[in-house]
Length: 149
Length: 342
Picture 1 (cartoon, rainbow over the protein chains, first blue to last red):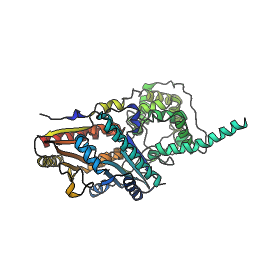
Picture 2: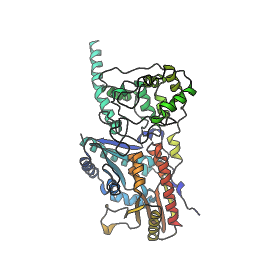
Picture 3: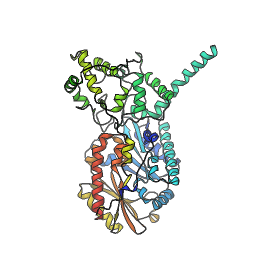
């Protein structure tokens, strides 16, 4: 018997949020500098760096030509522990993540807007948390963008 | 009167910086700070600026390109959109913005279909679906100036007037592979026929919101085995699907010291690098959710196996080209979850 509980969460987005599903910025700084700016901004925003996934390294090892590409995972330890205990279904989206990749001599950063998960729970506390994450993500990305100017 | 003139001048003086600022916030990430392109088309190309009118820019920002990365900017006010257009137009040094008659062009779409297949389909696709991928490294060489636009996209058809399309066909776009079809030997009537055929692509856009509503945010199954047994089963299932195991780690790794870690939340990462490369070629942003990951959690006596739902991604990224890859990823995840919990 298939035990999918996949209908657990239905994401219903409001029409107005569609253009904001993805948060993206361009940093005029090269990849290495942008990466440093990102890590610094994450820390300044009160988050801890969890891990950096080196996507480009894996691709290169298998013979694929690629530019620099990393995914940076981060979170607030107590928040991750608390939320994952109370909302285990949220775990696949934790910790928070931002992809960063080189585009010629500049750098692009992209994140999924946490608010797009909001309607899945209909939980005012989570709504606030997602909104806070969005605000923090925007602040982090903006710091990288401005830092690259 | 003098005060009014001064106020008007001051207004103009502030409009430009605002346009640049708004462009920097909303457009530069894809189109480049100076409009040189990247994920998005190079807006600063003289051949482009001289062949599209302000209404095209306006409607493009309002409608986006459903399924083609470019989002609809529904929150920008008319004044903000006009300011962005003014900023984009500031790159156009040698000519004024064109304006086009909004009357429909009358042509024979049937004849236009034949001409389209002969002259346009190579670049724009047999159904006007456009070129593949986006403009960044993973998708195409950097020396190509532009990807052929999707002419069948409801956003394009809603933004481009018949006469704008006709003018582009007649004059071509300097600096891009788009040539003048008058110079290629087509008559003006032939071109009208092609315009009529392109216009016949128009179909109602499927609401991305509706598509998203149909998909759960994640896939979850319950395992009757222990956490350790389930993690081992997930790994076996991933390898069985020709994926390479990257690592497994606790959710809290990097956030707590080793002795404080919750060992009941295990994330298994695995990858098929060809799949990863191909997906990045379609849309470099998709790396945000790659490599693949299945999480196994033991809580309250239950073991749950869970992943994100890849079917939501093509809609989240507004990129219909990802659909096949996302469907494939969905099947892989579904199979792994099922195999690991059988």
